[in-house]
Length: 239
Image (cartoon, rainbow, N blue to C red; front, side):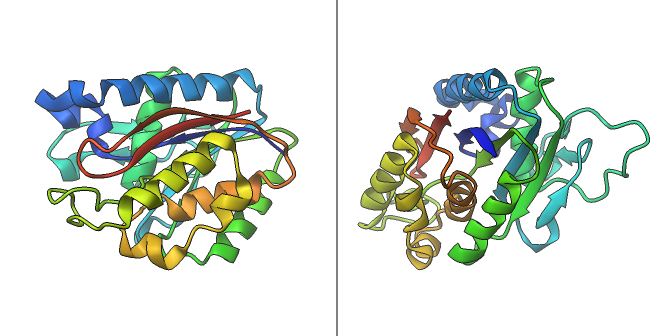
């Protein structure tokens, strides 16, 4: 059963080594992420699953101890998804960037509250498949927590990665309301096609969360909302 969730954005710029001179620009977002992870720790989960967008090479399960890096962003920084499990499965594939950012956040907050694993979700995964994946995750332990990584639209300004789209602000506002109130029905109703058109990398991850939280009766709080680079970033805590 899902007992808590934290929603965080996943730009590699959250990692100070990657952001370099611009590290202070996302300092408030990092603080909010730390606060959200504290809610997860307080829930005393039996298992933490990190869910985030991934390309085909990174889709699917990633075990505890899986490695990731930010070499592709010009930084010689490496991370692990939790401590390696003695005698456990080999780490296997590298973590996709979203899960590497999550691994950095967990390490940054000294996570040691429960075993952790990852799930890379394809951004085009259909809503029903996202919801089904969430329901399955919620049933994997008595007390499950999720760290859900994903960004909103990338079309908020003319300098945004997807340029300006007049629909982006309303899309992000609706997402912020749903995430901030733990409204699973509203998350499940997010238009997947519109999310793709607006380059909202978090849509599928949010809908996995919606499936996992069905019937859990969690309350939500929005801890951060901004679009500093023309991309919607949200931090929320559910408990």
